[in-house]
Length: 127
Image 1 (cartoon, one colour):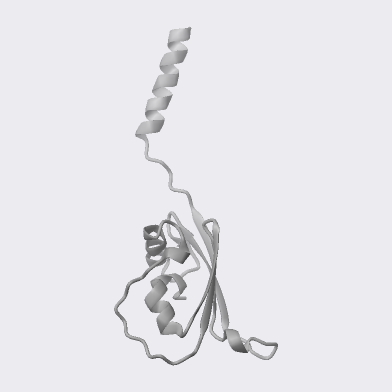
Image 2 (tube, helix red, strand yellow):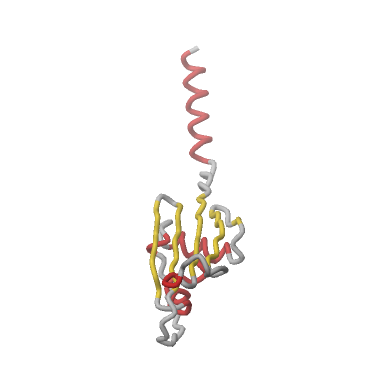
């Protein structure tokens, strides 16, 4: 009996080690505010939000795969995403604030304009 139980346990352990681990699905709530300094009762239409799911890429995000790839390369943290594009941006001041909640973090940052956001975070906030 002990030998059979030990053999069953050893077989189960071997099978669990041999099968690929299931990737954990991470969900991110993403927000973009195109006019953070003029936010008031009269300003409408400048706040956008979307849900992004990674592992596998899904959700409402139009560039989910690209966004998830960037987040994965950053260790699952939106704050560490560095898109690293070589785009040149004008220095006009039209601030854009972003918030990401998910993956165990809450990330907030304000960029000087949408181009600077795109250069810094790539597809993550491109929706």
